[in-house]
Length: 485
Ligand code: SAH
Ligand code: SF4
Ligand code: F3S
Image (cartoon, rainbow, N blue to C red; front, side):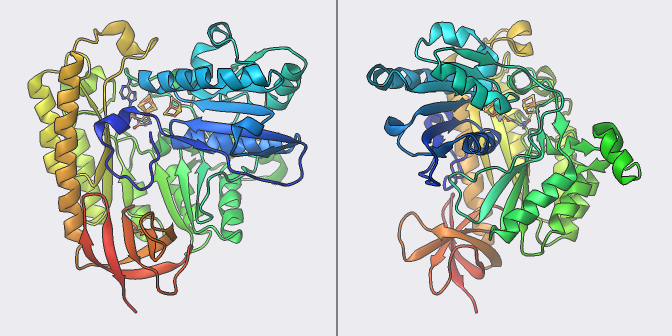
């Protein structure tokens, strides 16, 4: 889920380690004050920034794309790798100058780094006024008011219930066609390398009715694609009894457990013209029921992000992923059996985890040969303080070895992406248009069901249209097509 770089499917090593960020856009609804948010990390974080913008809008703030005119600057941060945190530290030092010139400006650090470092951040970064964790955003207007009166504030309370279900997000950086919907928060998995369970807290699922309503509202506004977001969407679980007793009593709803397959179906039924995507699927939890639901609905996109991390069972065990190589390959075989060759599959990989041998690294490469991913997000291992791996294992693979292994993984992925794209040539595919291609205004960019970008000549088509194309050419990252009438 890391690095939402929409046009780049395979992220080169340097870029994978750099942290891409998104900023707010200019929005003028006549509010008194200006808010600038810069968001780092995964789609969940970008989605949270939309919730933050919504909360702040109700409290007198329009967004701006220019931090120099902002009354409040928020950095919504990521802790997943060391590099992500260093990028934010560097950015804060750049904001030092502007804070000197405009001392009345409020600077807040939100998100995972705020949660991980808590008040230490206030001590270490003198210009920071607020440190606010992912479950405390309802407190932001309060904290900002305090900061305006000179009180620095920290709220890193992690909740077992907060899902922001009632908050209608302000869509930021949106192409007006596709939007994200958070369906759950937190993570209970405790993969040994991962900081997320510490920064996002316990897993909790959002009321399915509020999710369907959000999807319906988006469709009514002209959106044509929603992506359901969670660290592990397959463990989505909600029941009126467990999650909201009052609701059960009021509406007399029968006891019923909603799992991810059920939710997926409910969202798919909003409208056949609303595409549904989801991310991320954990290999231990993805069920046949989910795969059959995907098959049953044309508007559920045939694409699964199924991060493997390593192709070696011993390393997977150390990572505490709770599946092994055979389990993973069985799940992939099931996807192919139920959804066929054309279903897109992508992965995340970590090169050079603690004690990984050359042979074990080779297992990752051979697994890739078997699965043939359409694309992958690839990283070298970065030890995170406080995680199980940091406590139990030595980070003993030298950096140059990690980087070399990562290069080998990237090289293999590039080759597979090209092969998989070449298989599409000659096929007729339906694409949802997202806007102009970066290269030319005469060309449009859309996505096929398998999440691949397709470029084609504009004709009379526009953003939000569904277009049938014949795929004529490709690179490792992009398909090219021609409209068929
Ligand atoms: N919930 C998702 C992952 C979210 S984090 C899942 O379980 O698949 C996104 C990716 O960052 C992970 O899949 C992993 O490949 C990578 N990552 C997480 N912690 C890392 C670390 N300490 N070093 C390097 N990469 C890491
Ligand atoms: Fe991290 Fe594992 Fe949870 Fe993904 S499933 S967020 S890798 S702990
Ligand atoms: Fe996402 Fe980074 Fe936090 S990947 S959950 S913003 S640590």
